[in-house]
Length: 377
Image (tube, rainbow, N blue to C red):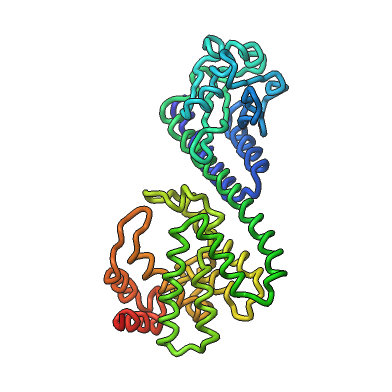
């Protein structure tokens, strides 16, 4: 049974991660997660969040499986001395998973025991959903066997809840981004003849949310301008690169700050979210009517000439020259500056990186111009 439970949890974690990557809104995400939980073999699942009322009622927002009216009979109030001590209330209150190994005998399950027994719930786990620092909701999973959740299964389901929390934050950040885009569309109408004003507005919006990214964009823009000048590009081309440099990471507004500023290595799902910033940035910048391909430069700044970059894996002939310049400037600035997860590695280390990968990851002409730019400094 233990091996079966762990295998079930591994499959659940894997399938739910796929749901997270494809989700477009919170309601869809919660409903799909509950569906997958039940399809994998658990009896019932539901997601609930604290309502902003006097008694802090936990309101169900999605469910799946053999509920048969269970949630209609459920009443969890975090201010009630008896009803907050159930697994859901305790999970939200403590921020830690709560396991009921035997619903039929657990004293804290008294208010809901009869209803649970009628639906053949034998054990359960409540997993806190931590949004913006604290637990504000829970994912509840029920099994039809006693003591269904061992330590290995607990670890995997806790990871699932953590991933779901990140997914919720990401969706909310995307909603914020949508609002920013809608506001930007209105601004574009008024700033159609003042593109510099639109660039400053976007830069300011990014700086307000994440000062580190804003400073990074400014430095990348300066390096890219120096490279483009040495390469003999026209003033028009240089200006488009400068603007793209100032905006190239604007798509990170859709990524939760907890991920952007994480002091440790990112998980696979977190990295997948971060990699969406090029496309997100393109969708924002294309709303501004530049004559130059600024949005395309933003979209391609993480492409590499050997096809190993993202989002499309383009090779050298398909990457516009301005994006090749921005790619090198971005790498040099990132390596030579302080990052949330490490100290600065210095300019010399950055130049070694582009030199070693000249003609492999980075355009040869661009690398040579970059080396000249720093030699002059």
